Structures are given as C-alpha cells and as structure tokens.
Length: 125
Image (cartoon, rainbow, N blue to C red):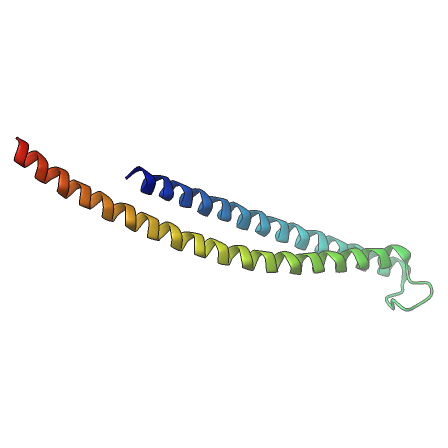
C-alpha cells in the first residue's frame, strides 16, 4: 500500500521536525542561562567596584541596575521557553505515538500482502 508508506514517511518527518524544535529550544534555554550567569558575574563585579550592594541606594551603579534588568528579562524569557519546551515535548510524544500506529498499520498490511501473494503464486505455478 503506497498510501500507508507515504503516511509513515510523513509521520517520520513530523517526528524529526518536533525533535529539531525541542533541540533548538534546549539550546536557547542553555544560552539564556549562560548569558544570565555572565550578567550575574558582571553585577557582582560592579557592586564590588562601587562598594554598594543595596539596589535602593542613590549611588548604586547604573550599569549594575541595567545588568540586573537584562538578567531578569532573560530569566523571564527562559521561563517562557521552558513552557514552550514542555508543549513541544508533548507534541513530540503525540507524533511518536502516531508514527508507531502508522508503522503497525503498514507492517500489518505488509504481512497481509505477503500471505496473499504467496497463495497466488502457489496456485499459478
């Protein structure tokens, strides 16, 4: 059955695309985490240089304030990406289940054809 083979190929393609999406989300989450860690180090260094760690102090370094804001934005974006990752993981699981069903249908159809063609050749030959 050509249509079953096409269905299996389509499902395999969908599974591969979902895996790629998941990998990209993982890479972005890791990159945001790395950037946030770098910003943390810069904040600590700036606070140490200024000798002020109280964010409410009038002389708190402007660079440290800006770095804190960027870090917080990265953390928020990272949390959003984590939610997207969970949704993508769920979609991948569904796509893998559909692929498994399509493969079972194809293998079942394949076995049925082998039995049919075997019986016909014995009758002809």
